[in-house]
Structures are given as C-alpha cells and as structure tokens.
Image (cartoon, rainbow, N blue to C red):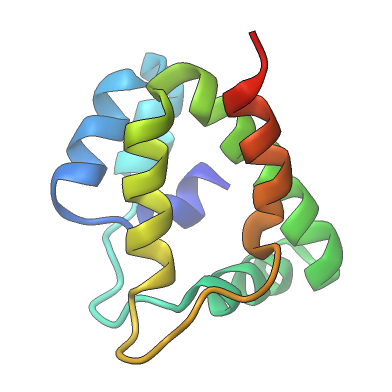
Length: 112
C-alpha cells in the first residue's frame, strides 16, 4: 500500500508523509517514482487490487486500514490533504462513495 501511495502522491503531501513514517516504511514509500498521470481515487483502488492479486473490495478495505494507521501517525490534516490529492488527481473526478474505506479512517480520527 505504501508503494502504491508512492506512485501517486507528489509535492508537500509526499514529503510530509515520508517524514512521519518509520524509516523502513519511508524507504518503501519514497522508492516509487510518482506516475506522471495519477489515478483517480477509485482507479487507485483498482490498480492496487490488480497489483496485489485481490478484489477491489479487499483492496478498498486494506487501503482503509492502512489509511487509519497513517491517520494516527500523521494526524487528520495531512490525511485529508493526502485523500484530496488522491481523489482529485484527474480532472472532474469525484470521490466514490466510501472510497478507500473512509468511514474507517473517519472513525480512527475520532477515536481517543
């Protein structure tokens, strides 16, 4: 999942996330060159499913789980910026319902 994010995130979001990750995770994340044509939110999940040999539903669940952990590491402000970049990568794209298992990420934000 971190490698998949590494292929999508650019700019300050990429730098800020890498700075918050443990060293080994940061290396996995930053070892990926961002794709010149980033995927939309749903395209990101479908690409992850294809690369991992799983279904889009499982990839969405897994993505939500990883984003919940990332939220604990980086806080809600950076997570929101990451999600906005992933979901606005393509012109006129819109975030699909419950993209990335965001209900799970939202619960993680509100838990103590």
